[in-house]
Amino acid sequence: MKVVLSTLNSKFIHSSLALRYLRAYGRTRGQAYDIVEYTINMPVLDIISDLTEHEADIVGFACYIWNIDMTLHVASLLKAVKPEIKIVLGGPEVSYTARRILESHDYIDFIVQGEGEEVFAELVARLDKKESPFKPEITGILGRQRIGETLEQPINYSANTQIEEAEITKIVGSETVAEVADLGTIPFPYDESDMVDLEHKIIYYESSRGCPFSCQYCLSGNANTVRFFPQERTFKELKWFVDHKVKQVKFVDRTFNCAKHHHLPLMQWMHDVATNTNFHLEMEPVLMGDEEVALLSSAPKGRMQIEVGVQSTNPATLQAIRRYNNWDHICKVIAPVIKAGRTHVHMDLIVGLPHEPYERFAQSFNDVFSLTPHALQIGFLKLLQGSGLERSNEFSYVYDPKAPYEVLSTHVMPYEDIRFLKHFEDVFERFYNSERLRTVFGYLGQRLIREKSSAFHYFEALTKAWLQQDLHQRKLNDRDQMAFLHVYFEKQGDVVSQELLEYDCLVSFGGKVRGDELGLPKQTKELLQAGEAFWREETLVRQYIPTYRFVEWRRIRQDYCEHTVSLETAHILGALDNQTLETYQKEGLSKVTLIIDVKQRQRPFVRPEVVAN
Image (cartoon, rainbow, N blue to C red):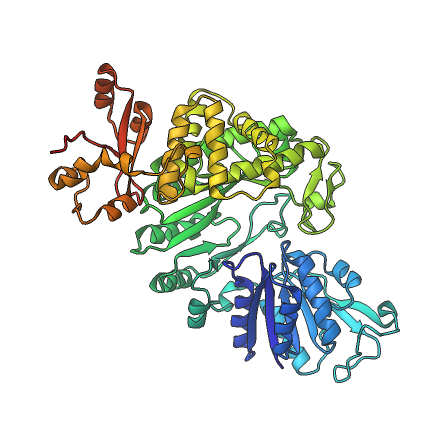
């Protein structure tokens, strides 16, 4: 029996851990499954064409909010052209609505509810032996039993079938969400072939399943339990990734730090191992203590990055969603990690939660912004099928009934506010969260906090300026976006931000994004002549660039830019210390010319004045 496992990833760089777990467990039962992955950006008919080439007897799809509608479309066409294929769905998007899916989509044969390794393998074994998958029931398998059908002679459901599906089938089986009791029975999901196939993709991994919390917007805590993979095995598997020089291992544990006996030894191992691999962890800040802070604050830079879900700082909101944040504790454990600068910190907020109108969301934003995380992600509430909020009628939610079920209005936040916040999120993501503009927005963030100004209202004004120019309706390139910011800072009279933006443009785009509208005119021959005498003095240049050797002008101009800025900007960039700044100010200087390494191998420095011979 030929079995194909498939999913539609949201992007090419993503990969499916779930399918590889199914494949690995199937091998323990003597079963072989092929894995074929697509993306939601691929044409449906191309996917159908490829799937049919495999001549499968069973096709299983992993379903998530980003792919459920397209997956159902693919499944319906696949059934139409190959009615003999058994189609099986699994994944979080169908685990809690299995009956509803089967009732609405007559081309689906079975749904795996919950963790599928054991139950899917048993389903395949039964179908291979032409035995009933319902007698006895397989826990976690709900399916369609066709009246009058035998496994040897399936009913052909083509587009011309005249008999109504409801008249000849009934939905039977288990409606229990399955769990694997002993995670140690599931083999390591990756093999050598995956390291070739996934060379340019994100590698997902887990050391635990489940969540100890019961947040009402989420499905992970429905069972309110956590199970762990054997720790010694986890060490070996992480070493396998390191040995294979994997760029990033992204843990999908819903709360990585839920048990100190489990996560602290793993974090210590990540901290100590000699590798360039980055480990991405979802951390619950309320459960963090001195040990976690110490490890994250002293790890080699870039070794770990953490994602911290705050969602809201409003006590009424947190109570309604059954989330128990302690803001003072969050500040205590997160602030030193950010200050240490060793670990990238990503923090999350959600728009549309109960009891959080527009201005109260602004306060939550300002609270989190005050910690200056490297990224502050603004998400929009999605009423996941089967979640507590989706089952509740308390908060007058209006939302899109199709995946991803995004909220359009709430009992305290009208659609107009949510619509504006979508634009706000877009502008904030483009600029503040962009790694390309870390210098200017790092400066702005510190200034807003120092002046006790509302960061939310600063970015609100920036968003309004963006909308007034109808930029949300245009496809903008990098130059367009940088030019918008440059003009905005100019109108604000914010010279330092303008100059820091110019610096970010030089180092982020390798000196290639230039133009008068960015304050970065092209380096003409006349402009370059002023610094020529400096570059010819190799001994002098080596005081700033130890490895410098004059070879040719072209290479110098490719790697270095000369740019005139105010003294304050030069000081912020580290090109002037306090004493030199005071000296220049006393001498009446207002600007200096910096030499900027566009590859950031060393920090900017003030070009010394050299008299040409």
